[in-house]
View 1 (tube, rainbow, N blue to C red):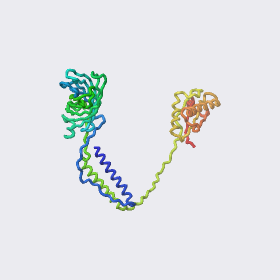
View 2: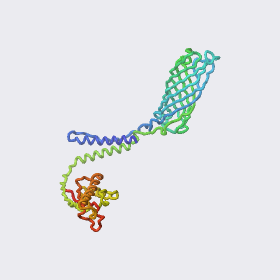
View 3: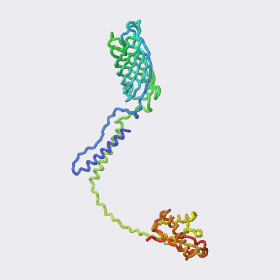
View 4: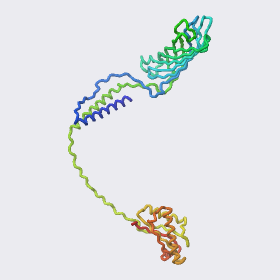
Length: 396
């Protein structure tokens, strides 16, 4: 899939480049050749891992080892312990850090005296999967043969021959047999031999090179769900040829279009359409139905009557081009005409203050009138005339 993306990108780049060159053909003469892949040779399959965390593993093993050095009598074998952390970079090549240790028992200076000391070593190994290299990558292959080589550092301690520690820089080589048990677990057998200078056991005599030879077995735990994915850079040769054919076809069409003369475009006449605008009819010049009622000899708007003031405020907000006249009244049978005149003004003023103060209506949109008791909106019911009414009109 990655190859397809690359190929499509190359094809688009070719088309864009060609169009740019053609656009300057009036100034520069360019000789172009069609790009055609006549034959694609099959390529080598490449492999990649999806994630950095794929193809890591740890190994834990144990076995036997012996120390080849100044020695008298039979070879002595001891327990060897091994731990390794590694990663396969490709199906053929891997790296690992391997730690080994244990006790070594050479017979020195004669076969009657056994020299006991311990050691620890760390190796950096380069792994080569011979089976994948020769037979092709197969994730489910049961048996793999893996040679390896590396360098390291070794430390010998608790040596009775001398009281100090000795160090070595061994080079090593070996071979590993890997047996696949599951996707995540392998069993292995491994043999290793190293070589270092003639001082590791604290005796500089006899052989110039000392060596630790080991054979171990153990388990390997592999991390990551995926192993390696394969792709062939030349495996999409049919797609490549098809893309080349499309590029050449587009190139031919572009040349054909540029060689044509475009006919003159007809003149476009845009007819202007007059849309009549309906005359707006004002709804301001009408008496409003809301009425604010008051108790006898009172100019206080009761909580029950606040809803009527609210309705007037909402009407004014929805009709910003309308103004309102607030008209106060008093009943004729209570008080003198002069007193009722003042009372009606107070009632109208109370409503105006609520409209402007509580509901934010501008004062210049409101006219206030106190009619007193000279006129009665409800001549047949005296008590109903203790009110404030409203009348709308268009703003100037």
